[in-house]
Image (cartoon, rainbow, N blue to C red; front, top):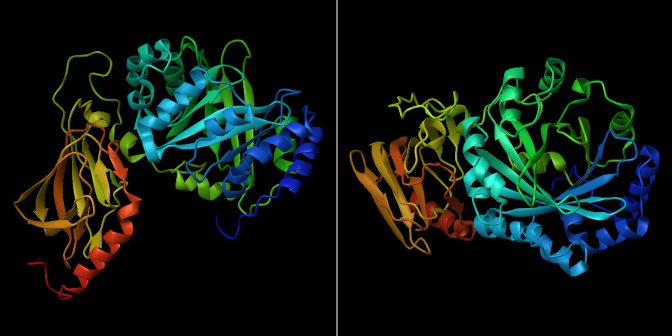
Length: 468
């Protein structure tokens, strides 16, 4: 949290919550809210906190913390009696097991009933199958995965369970731009009627190029019931015309961060009809938290590297015969490993089932992050310069490779790439994981050791000489 973020105060929050609920005409219970803050106090103090409401009269005042620390919030809620064990808590446990140290749990509450949702940040972009193809997910949702992939709803960044409505939420990052045809395409995959062109134009005025679509599925059968297009970080001068309740939130809500984060979500589905959601930061530097998680804000013209590499949707995704593809590697990005990568052959670009092949580049006198690839082997063919690879449970080994040489890295072996020379290094990297970044797991406990090794070896090299 930076110096622009106010420290959370229990007393101030209780006063602000009661006042805000009164202003928007929402039911409120002070004892319930006090108990929530007492049980989850550490997360309110260390996380980023926001308000959330809808434009429906009488709806609850919601609030959320986005956690910065990894803990089991479900067990905390169970111990406090906020939730009961069941399919929802079992599903969160499964996501936590699947994504390990990458999974960060956050929580939603409302000012009258208390606990509402558990969120799980999955550590970055994940293939939908990795999050949803497991026995804890309702069978109807698992059966829908091929149809979701056909329309490009194949990557997920957040998931959530809703205890009050007995449902789960899946937050897809989808390829844009958001046009009437694209909206109809993605909503058709979840059996929800498309909005009219005017509504799409209103959303597109603030939705980023690659957009977030949150879909709600029932917990028992996995039937889709709602879908919501989100826009976050809307500047004051780009806020569209708003209904009174949400205008009041944006104008009158108490907040204490210097950088304000406003969010809108257009929700569509049968039953409850169409309505507008709104979020507003409170304290804890929400802007920094969203950037930590690589959330695209209003005005972002950047494309997600993996999604951009997959534009247009892979040939054959609609059931056509497999095709030979040629990929022009143009989409450069920095992966979790902190190395320059260019997307090439992978599931997202060609529909690969068991292989990825990308280009890699390393600046002179630089290193990447220590990591492993869970369950997948890797290889590197060096095309320029010279690299050093540190490896082993304590990075106790290292090996150099130069132009024309091939390097093999076993699955699950801690390692780190480095360039100790004054010349750039480059190569072709291949792995048995079709989703390039998805088996990457960082090992922060080895970063101090890595930094010391790299600094020591770098100091041994003449400033103008390459490693021998």
